[in-house]
Length: 134
Image 1 (cartoon, rainbow, N blue to C red):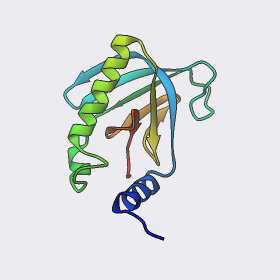
Image 2: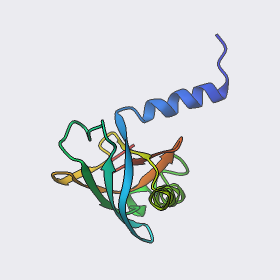
Image 3: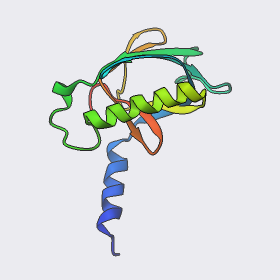
Image 4: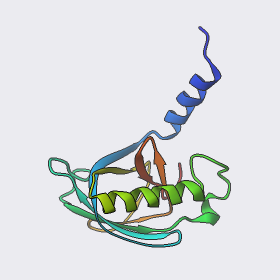
């Protein structure tokens, strides 16, 4: 069988993101200060946040430059984090659904329905949080 280089890259990329989930949400509130953010997300009707009883989730965090310095380019860098924040701002302004989720251990649970993030990325229109590793 012949595989193009692009096929191999796509296959490897999707394998590295295994173990995540995303949910349709609306942005109830969003505060940003440079790379820092605090967002409250309303889970779309008919969906649940990882089977938790949370209608609203709160996620706060920042782009952890020190943590992600070894990642050059994708999947994690400051520009992708900024793009994810812009996507959240637009969703809030337009009151539209956006898909929000995580890869692997993408958020640290702080308390019920409240999470911490060390960076966000946008991948194919979905926003993902990353906390420990990719």
